[in-house]
Length: 306
Image 1 (cartoon, rainbow, N blue to C red):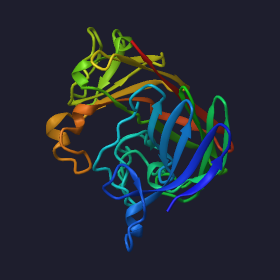
Image 2 (image 1 turned 90 degrees about the horizontal axis):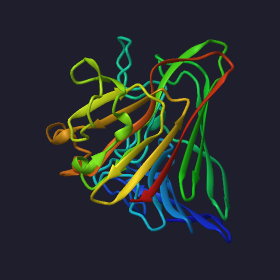
Image 3 (image 1 turned 120 degrees about the vertical axis):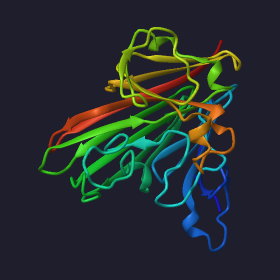
Image 4 (image 1 turned 180 degrees about the vertical axis):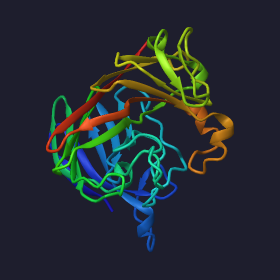
């Protein structure tokens, strides 16, 4: 079933159901309530978009006159306890594997919890949504009371802001990433010239180096580039460029699993790794989040034709 949440002169926002094993919205299958998530469909003169309230995750952003900017696996899982493969997962309060000797899921817990829709607004420029996630004692590795407030603007560009509040009397640390899966013709057709000359850490080799030549986006690749400069991902075949401007993020993570690793991942459809490049605005090193404080990170994504 669908429900219209906003319908004015500028936009329509509709509550939808995201089904297990289906990257498009649909009706809830009878007796299958654990294998779906609530989502939102957004229609505005400047763009179409979709997101999942589970994980507070943007799944699709299609500006008028362009292909979808984001990639979503045809085999993405919509089951509780499983991250959704594609779109922009939120990695928080840690990025990657936690460095403590306690069993924990990669990339924290924010992407595997249901978020609440707090507000919707729409005008001639776009649609603004506010999503909230809060709790305490969420995980032994992060027991602090917290509140996450994500503000999303969908218009000619996509603006994503994440405010992280430590509501407890104890100081905390966090690491994070806005884990964007960008849809491309093929990784081999993509260049990111702004990474040339940048120091990086290669997670596959354990070595650090400087990017001397134009980086290849063909997987397997998993690197943390130490830069906060804007990035432009140029796709020569699709004749478009995606520009990402981040704020308060110290790294860019470049990731693609490559064929061999992707073939072991059940939630990537066949040859799916040939359809995206992940370029993630991130703080991959521990950052301070003192008691009673709020830290904000953000990114703005714009697509233009070459």
